[in-house]
Image 1 (cartoon, rainbow over the protein chains, first blue to last red):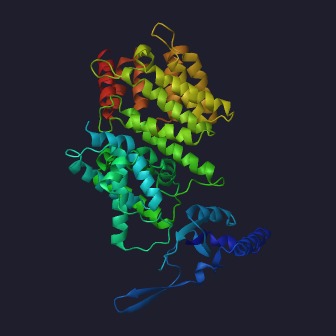
Image 2 (image 1 turned 90 degrees about the vertical axis):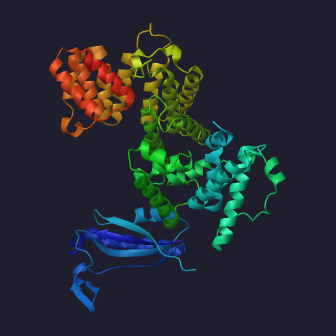
Image 3 (image 1 turned 135 degrees about the vertical axis):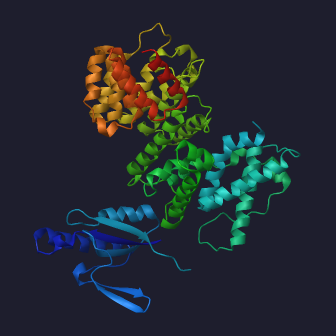
Length: 115
Length: 404
């Protein structure tokens, strides 16, 4: 099954370069390389901060644009991995290995299967 | 009890588990099993089966295959090759012992940590123990439609999120096992509260005995599993002595050990010894030992094991601070150090947090009564009674209150 691992963190922590930040990025690269090696990785990337986001909402007479992310929250979607593993346990095990700068959460969402 | 009810009770969990794991589909297992039971109800009165469990299993399996064909789903799962439909003779000669015991796998599915905690116990009781949604709703004090929805949501999550039907591997094992055990503890606590065993989940204590036996047999090197099985035995062994002639609760120290179920106690003791031999201590072993120290008592003439119980409560608190353990410990402490010391312990607890916790008020009332503080004791009894205790405890509380 394919899963999206959606990473939510306080993005203000990512504003300044710091040794911690470099370590997290290196850890992401190592994890992604390992998952690719194992043939598990289907995609993934880091996202720019949510102040660069534009939300397009469909309205009765067209579309409204909103300068900002879909939902304002302390923790924002900052990156994702797409993986293919046998079951939820395997996906959860990888989610636990995703490096986070400090606090944060990883949402594990199964990807819809199109037969 | 008729043959169908009895078979459903004895073999229903195994049949549903075998279907669920074979087809990797909880809804299908439930539906096919329900259909088999409906057919049994129609057919058995005139054509009683030789082996009722095997009949139900074969019929449910055939019905599951029918449903799959009707859905016309081409799944990539490795289903066993579709069998030719069993003839009546096939059904009659098949043997219930051939139903694979997949209950452990089903338990791990139902108690997966990705399933909402409030749904896990309910789902286990529904699928593995075969309780009706109505019975579970009543046991968990939830309206039936809400419980139905909770179960539906949990089954959908399991189906859609890719929860594995395999017993978890070593990496996930500690977390998964702990989720199973705490789920079953919640489930057993409900069964245990029903002191009379005549409530809507009558016999569900017995189902917990079966379930924990299965778990202990399948996981003989997990001490906490063995300890939980022991605890359920010690607690169920005392069931015959938990109520007096009027149906009021009898406190542990006043129960007549002659009425306890000795074979069940011996089973519990053997399980607890086996757990101890594995040399990995844990809170469930302490909780089982706490029950066990009582069960060695042979008659009311023997002194109650207050100091052994106190020592075990202290070990349990060293493991983890827990106001519920503190309240139980206070009952024991009152016997050893007197009610004033015990009351001081109770009063030191976070009263606002325990405001709706019935045992807090019941124990406090008793201690106040023993200290002769009648007015306060009356208020505490009233508060305990307000918090909807079970019928047996209610009677007991009313009696104690009237004795003031």
